[in-house]
Length: 263
Image: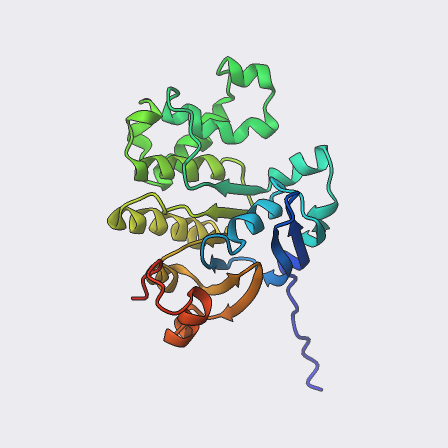
């Protein structure tokens, strides 16, 4: 014994035997188990219907899991109810494929919506935001490179710009974990990289753990620190994005699949 103690870090997120069965009998998740370490950029891949979106929506309780544990910073989200779910969501930001912005509101107003969890409803309805909330929102718009768009309507932005607004909105929550459900699926290839660059910036510069669903393996290899592949609601691969060769690709997506490019 040399007297040194090994430092054991607790995962920020631990999924244990997670099962989700929908009312129609479809088993979207079949006992999924994995850990996410603080600071990771974990990417989840798989065909449409493999359970990727269900998994993310169970983590932030947009969907209720059927059974299993979702341990976030030591607290089981699967057991949370009412105010507990709202409190948890304050620490988990989420970005969606279709942005979910309010088109007729300004960019700044959309970003401030991320503060709804700690702002009274009537104040938000009348735009009575605190000065420090506005300053925070502008800081995050600068982070994603569109502070100059703060006063224009959200529907005047391009798709990539709207997704950057959605990232800024999620950041105003001060989340410890950021979930991104197919964040670039509706964007052109060049814009995909721009949005992914900002997500990586959030991960590296702010230290926010990111869990993202992606389709294109070229993006996965460039941005992921680790990959989990789902097939039929079960994990079929977990490891480095660079170890997914042709054989793994065929196992995950099926022989002859053209849905995902392997570059």
